[in-house]
Image 1 (cartoon, helix red, strand yellow):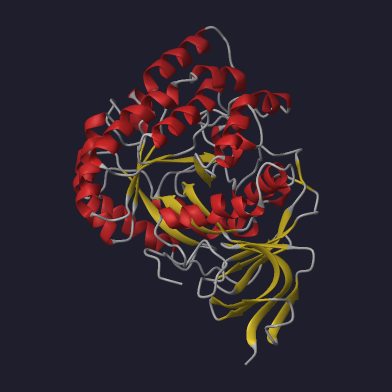
Image 2 (image 1 turned 120 degrees about the horizontal axis):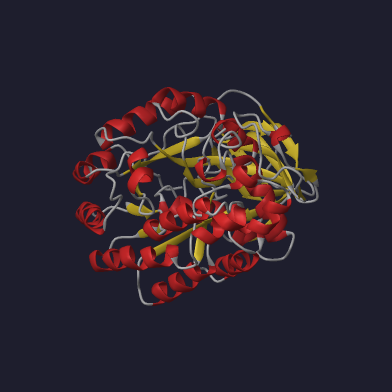
Length: 467
């Protein structure tokens, strides 16, 4: 019997390694993987000679609905518009937070699921943001709805915390303890995510530098000290170890933090480290040389070349195991129109350029293998979010979420490639030496040569199934 789709002659990256192979797709799943010419015929065939086939990226760290306007209407719009850049960039699944607020946790999860269903161009999960003591008690209700990741903004205090729906003291250790107790009681694979960045010294230095008239991305990097992540990783990590609950450190940015996490992991601390493409493909000095200023103001800041290299080594050594993007659907509205210290921190949509940059600076520059690339961008986050092997693997029975990469395609990056709401790119003027050229979501071609094709069909995927 003919397959629905046959992908021929690609270099296929499976959990068992890399090989030239054909992939047969029936319906939404991978039906067969075999040597070239052994899978028979298909209704639709694509010759992928010279191309690489990876499992679709799973971005575990994005913030739809928290862009220019932080509301439910913006969340609906962003699912339908901005996830176009995800599917074009080879991202097939995301975990996004709901809109920030103090409403009951499970109700905000329900609203977010409804906002994305049938509108998103990618499959998705919802990460819950904990801002109140009441939210700690509502964790079981959120888990019932399939939310298994709980974000805690430990790096904020005073007016920054209040703008995000928290009390002015931010996220004190007792709130983390209470959340960990709830996760422990549930006995599931749920985990706590922390934004680690000591807020009080950072706030004081920001005010000092602003008074002195200092600004710019190097100054921004300096105001968040070398140890700012590490002190909170240790503080909350001790609690996580005592209660035996996984603690996921989002956007690890400093070599100092990697050193600490490596030591703590060796001592049995249940710490998972994520980093971002923005910390792996650039640094504060390079960004200043391209006058990115407000546009590249992210929290924690983009650091220095030595931090970049330590992060890459952390990936090589298995200390840093997951790549996120920290995508927020910002336009320049809250960026260039503001004074430097008043400009809202955060990157804009990073999905479209993340895989090209990782392939360029990771694989093509010899830092990581194709298998490692597949692990950190797909397999590991799918495992952590309880979706493996339904997601995160090219294997028989898995969802046919696939991205086809041309490893020799050199192309300039920038806003011209974007199809969502972004009106700027911190990668403007940079060139990638590999590009996604086709993306399949659950067996259907969803993007080709930089454009979406077909219709939006993303679904909430609360729990994985066995492949």
